[in-house]
Image (cartoon, rainbow, N blue to C red; front, side):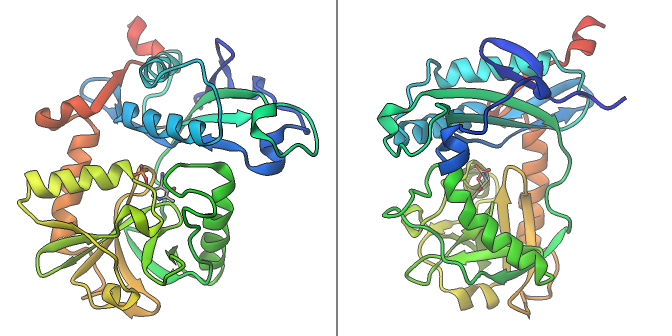
Length: 313
Ligand code: PMP
């Protein structure tokens, strides 16, 4: 039997289908919501879900709530605890995707003043496998530019901002590619529609800086730390020109949903030999151990939850 997706809402743990919002909800009309994407990675030997860096995700979530002037009655630690409990109520025995969402919940029309609109939030957990369909991605530079700090701040996951990502991703996929790479308004590389980006050149990792319109990705941060501490690689944050990607030794994308995934081709130009490069492979191997709680040194990045059926056993 398929596990039932569950939600935490209004103090209760319920099947997601029981949480309803109305057609007049402010967030539905104006994109006035903030969300997160967190993974719970199944650790078969321990019979536990390892939630990866939930506190960091919830700090970013609360930052987004602050931008939208929301007053949520919870801290990052409270949200982490609620997430552990949510998975504890489930019967999942596999990877889980956790989607917290805080939204402007008042049911009214024609009001563009954040301070007059109420807030609500929920946490949803659904079984989830892979997000990207290929192990090596064929990408295209989007004709849509990334939003910048003067439009909608890309450093937090505001729902309305994702129209930008969705336009780019849809066009890329309908043109036969796996993923879109967005440039910022100055023409520098920013990120994928739902992933940060790294290139490898002469053994050095390079990734765009936060001021180039990117989300400060938790996977990005994880990769930077692992590369420096475990692989002894230097990591530089600096603006990247589009053609640098064509000429890189390796390019890969990072994200909670996307994991660490190689880019084999951009704009119909092969990147090196078009496969998974050796540095990308090393980072992937380490990263997959770390997110499943199998690297003792990085166990502090995971918070474990035990699904109900196993807890009873
Ligand atoms: N950029 C964008 C636009 C994203 O939506 C995501 C996914 N959250 C990322 C980067 C990667 O961030 P993280 O590693 O925190 O999931």
